[in-house]
Image (cartoon, rainbow, N blue to C red; front, side, top):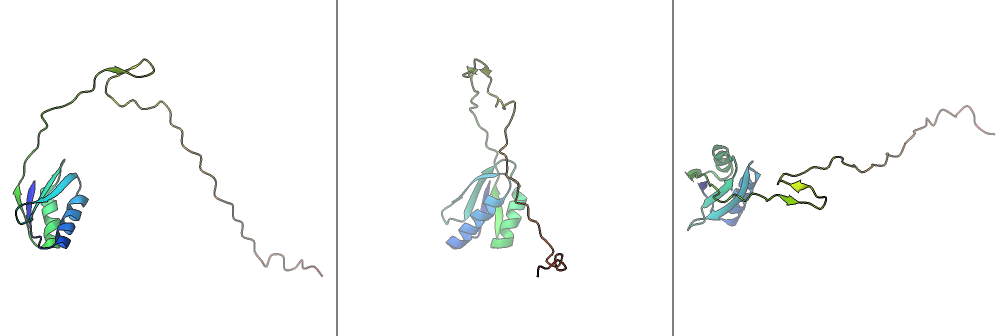
Length: 124
């Protein structure tokens, strides 16, 4: 998607990129255009209206120019390859059968004693 945003200085460009980076689903962003006033954003399931509203709040002007769906032509499928144990790997991530977690040390035991408890037992 391409958004036209009012970006007059480097500070405004950095702020627009920061807002786009914080938006959920954004994978890439770039500033383009002859006057460096267009923000190109790519990602999966990016809410264009929410992004435009956030840009308008901070930079006072933002409009949606184009929204396109990018389709990948080539999908690479992993081959059935045997791993070192003689088992076939069909492209799925095989999770281990058990997981070991590190042992965390116990926090130190702190005992607070009442200083007035032993007042009657003073040593002479």
